[in-house]
Length: 127
Image (tube, rainbow, N blue to C red; front, side, top):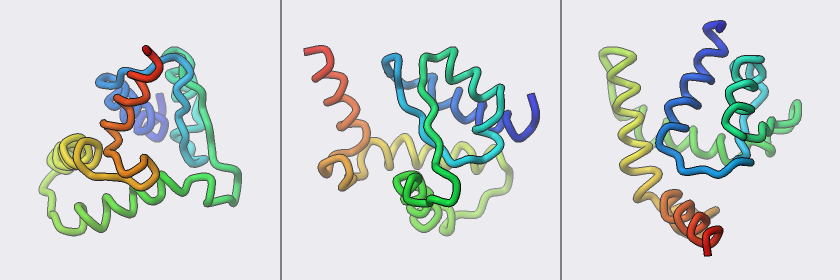
């Protein structure tokens, strides 16, 4: 696996571990080499995921992801200094999992946190 494709594959694998997702999960990304690689596409296929990519030159396709990264950078990363890559990874994981996904309300989710929104979707699917 190339170093570039490994970044996308490793991040996806880390996220996938704690996810209660059904087959057909849509995984949207930009057109970066790490997401276009054969290795990454194979991992998605093995997990029953559908890959979605932004159209070339159309940043609106990726607006939700761009909004997330803007928030991550302005609300968290710019206010912290990390000594190692591992320290940064752990701190960012904590920010995303403990705050952004579980407590921060999102207008796109009807002012629910992503965790609340996902749980509601799963409950509605089961009912």
